Picture 1 (tube, rainbow, N blue to C red):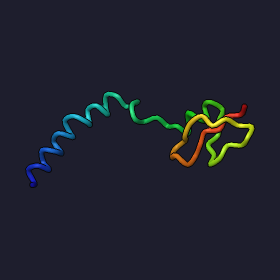
Picture 2 (cartoon, rainbow, N blue to C red):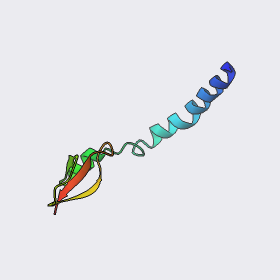
Picture 3 (cartoon, rainbow, N blue to C red):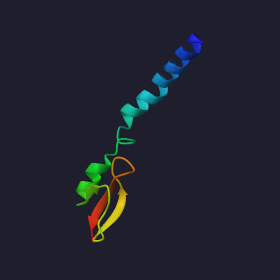
Picture 4 (spheres, rainbow, N blue to C red):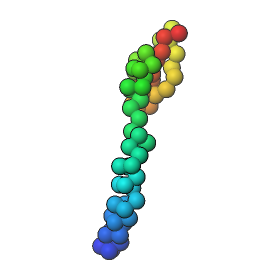
Length: 67
């Protein structure tokens, strides 16, 4: 069992870690910053005068833009 764990860690180290170093922009999108950049605000609910376009950090908060 220990040998399987060793090979799994070795496989992870050889494949995943170099990919994260080479392509850091994949999987590291900050949706809260992108919402603010688009002149929006992260809120639990959007008002009637706002449009919900995406989720912020977790599915309970929305990015709300003014109409």
